[in-house]
Amino acid sequence: MPHYDSPDLRPLSVLVSDLGKQIEAYRISRNLKQAELAEMAGISRSTLARLEAGNGGTIDSLARIMRALEIEDRLLDVMPDSKLSPLDPRSDTGKARQRVRKSSEGEAGEEWSWGDEAP
Image (cartoon, rainbow, N blue to C red; front, top):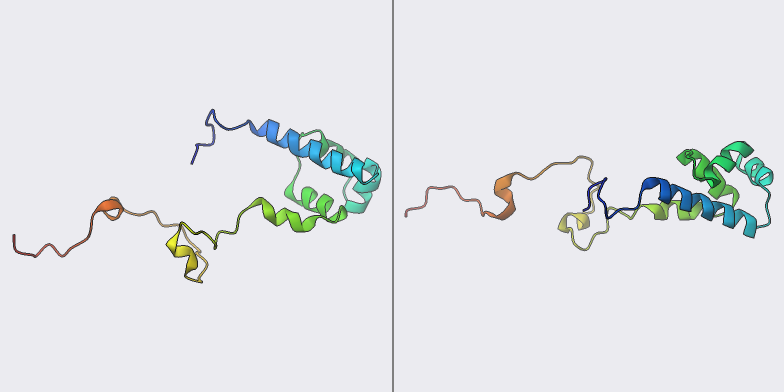
């Protein structure tokens, strides 16, 4: 997994700007003015303009916009379902994990034994 400030990742400002452009394009494709969508979403026009310009916003504002555009079901597609991983044998236990526990060094590649076996 790349580190947050890895040179391989696009800057967050670029990602946020691209998201804003997509919101704007979708709004325009639905023939809605900023003021109309903002009213439908229950946010101010300046908040919508700020999001479309890529100048930040909140998850709440994004969810309101997506609901107003009738695409709120796509909001949950942002994060994959953590319970369904074909690579993680713990994901099929049926129980949702509630805590994070790091494995110890000995668990990585060594098989555990009592240590009382005769040489």
